[in-house]
Length: 116
Image (tube, rainbow, N blue to C red; front, top):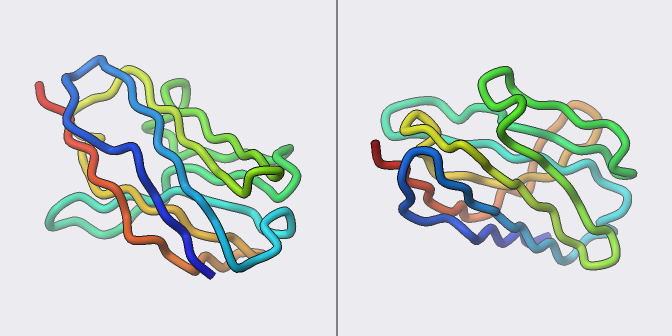
């Protein structure tokens, strides 16, 4: 299984970014998918998840209304659209598979830096 995250960059507060995660080596449509992030000196934290069908979506409270997770099962892709970015959103963002309550197959991450 390989997960390749991309789309990070340096932006200003209030800007938007869309992260992408390409999955291979698995039957993608069978897995829930999730995004996590880890800021320097902090633990990795859950950001958002989407069920295998796309019908069940969850967000951490601090990103609700600003971030949108989506998936395209035909392309084996999961996305994270991030609007109204804040400096505290700066982190390395990782995608992961979700099977039940277990997250795994972490990708290499993509760096998001939001300047004030």
